[in-house]
Image (cartoon, rainbow, N blue to C red; front, side):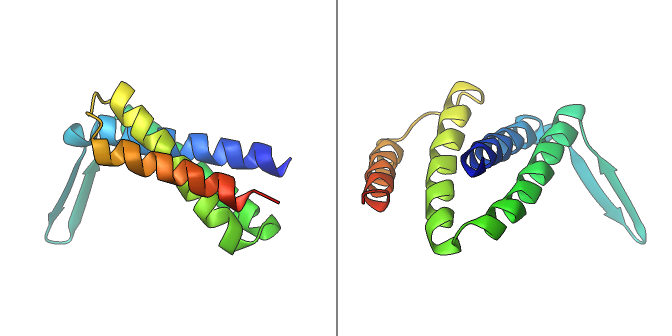
Length: 115
């Protein structure tokens, strides 16, 4: 069950960030004196919603797992998901350093899970 929550967390977190980035240029925050005006696109609101869901899942995950184990695992996998999503959805290019770093992350994840 916990691994399903972790997978949902990673998907919600990565998708939320990508959706926020997707329409970041049309979202505006204006502060004028005592007035605060926030204009967000539907895509940005959906991204924020997914990111909030990921935060709530993270709290549940932390209640059940050791932080010193789960944090590097989840952050490493999230980084790879975000990198792939950014490339295929946002059309951001891969850098060689990113690909090498992702390989190192994957090796680290394997080493962390060896018994």
